[in-house]
Image 1 (tube, rainbow, N blue to C red):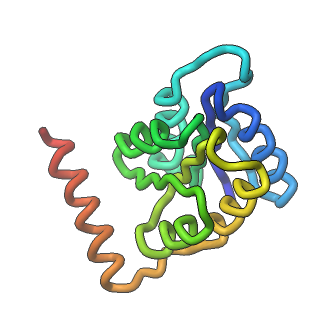
Image 2 (tube, one colour):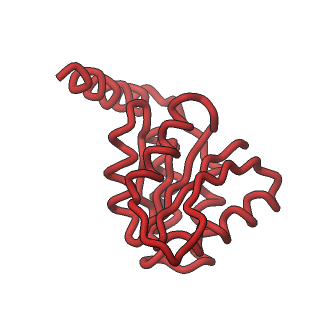
Image 3 (cartoon, rainbow, N blue to C red):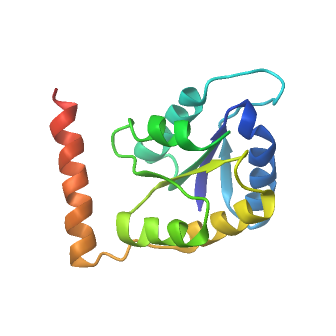
Length: 152
């Protein structure tokens, strides 16, 4: 799978671990930065880069890491076509994809450890949207909201 991956300075170390782990599993990883933990940068820039790559079809899914994961989630969800979810447990990770068709995973590097992050990412990547009528209907309502407010 082609995965776009980005992080701010707070998420840099976890991003580096994820890049190596995912490549080791045979995934194509597009590392969209940042390239250092030592220089403060702004999470919206990396959430935007990942979101645009996924929404534009340049990656199947995306992952954004910041300190808490909250800001990255808010920012990523501003990109049309992105359904980002903040997941710090495996249930939310698979349920977010299966029921809500989440295409960008957000993680908080200051909230979870490396082992849990790797487990969450594995579960999230293994999940597929169910396509069940109730889930498709709800996803379509979210997409309609996006279209409606894009015109404002």
